[in-house]
Length: 479
Image 1: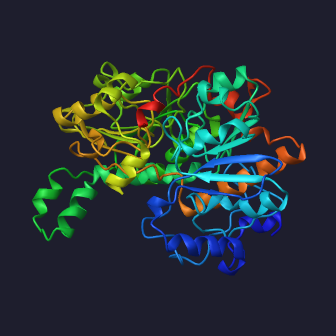
Image 2: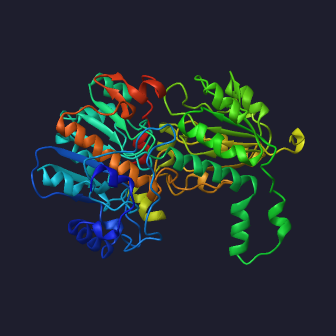
Image 3: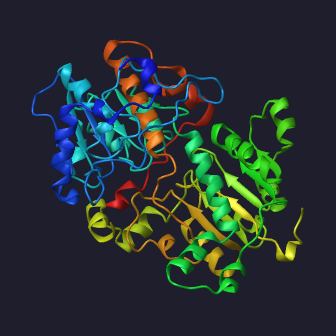
């Protein structure tokens, strides 16, 4: 398939036999028992990839839809990924173990080695076993293999850490710069996917959708039980902390709901965009939070944003705030999680598989989560009513333990980290990862917008979104 066909949905018949046979095998096995897929040959270059597990029921034999809509460009005119070809069907499950991001046929045809594993946490895990001779490491924000300074020291041949998605805070960027290891991601690939999830989450909390659905499924019909926490979004003041690709997309999608829009960002939106949205820019995100009914945090995680929602700043929000977190959040410290005995992924997988008067307002706070929010502050705010609800898809660590308090805290609509890994998004980031690998293997430059760290310095998108430093601490708590 040529580059133009990467953006088109094609027949499932285009899946190669190797992939079909591998997926057929996986449907007959217990997915929890299958953790690693590797080539049998000794390749020229080793590519190590950590992906989330296959469905518990096995790899899907078919899908709910036969095709994907065709997109030619992203909203800013940037072209979609354009590798020399693809060996997968757009719309297929590519982000899990057996999906392999559609890379195996491409890499093995050139004599390279591909190792794909779900076993990524703790000393001696499969991921660490393959680091010593790995030249390229691929991971996902949804299921991160934390690339700390210690792990980089275990990988003397490492040339690049590639994020299959957006958000490279699972990589110690300072260590990457110090060791001259490149870091890159597939910019734009799932920005709209996440923006849609944010809007969905806001509506779910404001309208009290999740309890209403659970009430109906449980056989109930007491309307008052549900509507006592249900409001209209219309007329509320909505603010985003950061108005980059995702934050701006959220504002654009909320505009038709008849809300008042606000944003905090060090970079102002273009004047014509700001005017069209009717959005007000603020110099302080906490001052904006005190004014708004809805706050959405869409900033990346780096040392300047870590722990920004804490015991001091939570009081800046209106009483009854709904917090939706789809970026990056915060659990406890590494020390406290160690005391709590947080399990490894292997253990976790086995165990879980116009204005409203201030006094009556329900503030909606959307925060793409990771390490931006203090775990216990969120739990306490929900219990006391300072927050009226919390929805998000990002946890720390990922995956969280089965007893993580965000699973059971009141008025929550948490999901696994899924906002940026829809089947539509997977098609784009799989193609983007292949494009990046093609460039490295052929000695060609990586698109500037994909670059986070290049030749020992922040570059491209990284120079705009990140600061030097390390925010990967705490990954060992997942072990």
